[in-house]
Structures are given as C-alpha cells and as structure tokens.
Image (spheres, rainbow, N blue to C red):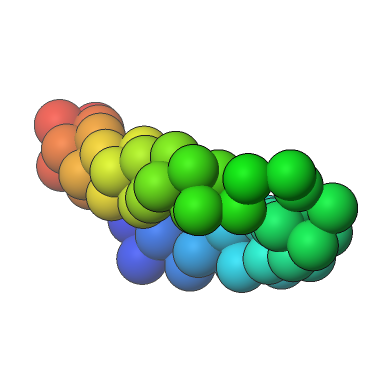
Length: 59
C-alpha cells in the first residue's frame, strides 16, 4: 500500500505540475526567480513520501 501511495504521489506530481510549470515559466516576467521557488515543490514531494511511509508503517 505504501508503494502504491508513493507511485500516486509521483504520478500526481509529474502528471500535473509539469504542464502547469511549463506554462508558468513561458509566461513569467522573471523565470529565474520562479524556477528558484519551484524547487521547494521537491521538498514538499519528498516530505509527502516520507509521511506516507511513516503512516503506513504505524498503520
């Protein structure tokens, strides 16, 4: 179950954020700053995977 949740998190991340991020970068007046902020999403993704794994272990 934990593996399936992790796959779902990755699928949601790459399935939706890639398209939206490309659109935001191409239409931004300052794509460098936007790219720097975009890296925070990776921290949220990894945190979600860790929280899911810990939640599944304690379940």
